[in-house]
Image 1 (cartoon, one colour):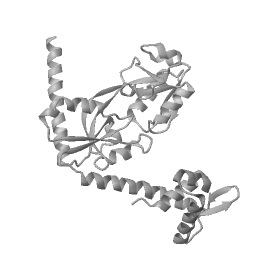
Image 2 (cartoon, helix red, strand yellow; image 1 turned 90 degrees about the vertical axis):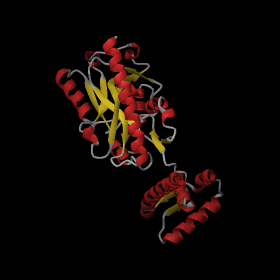
Image 3 (cartoon, one colour; image 1 turned 135 degrees about the vertical axis):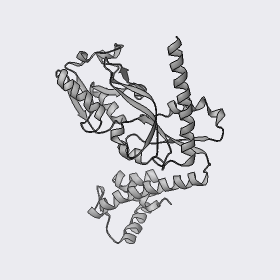
Image 4 (spheres, helix red, strand yellow; image 1 turned 45 degrees about the horizontal axis):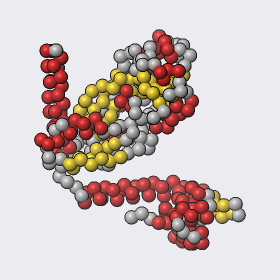
Length: 309
């Protein structure tokens, strides 16, 4: 399904020259130029402007470049889905996994009851935290993967997923290992006076908006810097490089090896749990019910131990 001409065209635009693209594609420059001639002849418009200093795209070429990238990505996903359908197990559960949404919490729970439900098989499906904003990821539940584990707010996606709550993540801060705060075991809010505190922009998260409002009202000495509307690995990288303080979660303490996650003396938390589609398949529904029974049982046992301890 992958179109070699589209792939070659994308590589030519990205490289800016036939020779560099040809080297990456393991072709000769002459063969690659012939492929581009065939592509332009097939489409009927000029896509490339050839000069002694390299190549650049025409306006039509720029338009075709963006569409070609979309078509390539879509075709790759189509192949993946076809293979998944061919190997479909009636109780195969595809679990989404990423740096900011690791599935280890779910697997730890499942390992305690897997012997009771041998009919279920697990498949880990990686996805990119930086690729799409979270509302889009929530809407893909049931397509690329069946369930995922993550922090969530009902106000940000109540119409696109269901959840089985497993617990609460605490809001913390992350700093570079070179930052003076890195050696502290705990911080209080006044410690941030004069510092830059990075958090995602207003209107994205009601919970984070609440923290922002509290800080701006009660602790105006803190410099709040708004970041893009979603957490990405790049956000962690920039905070490590700039020396800024990043509002984060204790569940993300292992995301970046050069950052230290430190608790703060406040009570702000966000729920996390298993997220699954509004209309789950029978397999997913049975899987979630099994998890729910185990979670209720574990919670009851923990409550009993606290009462009698």
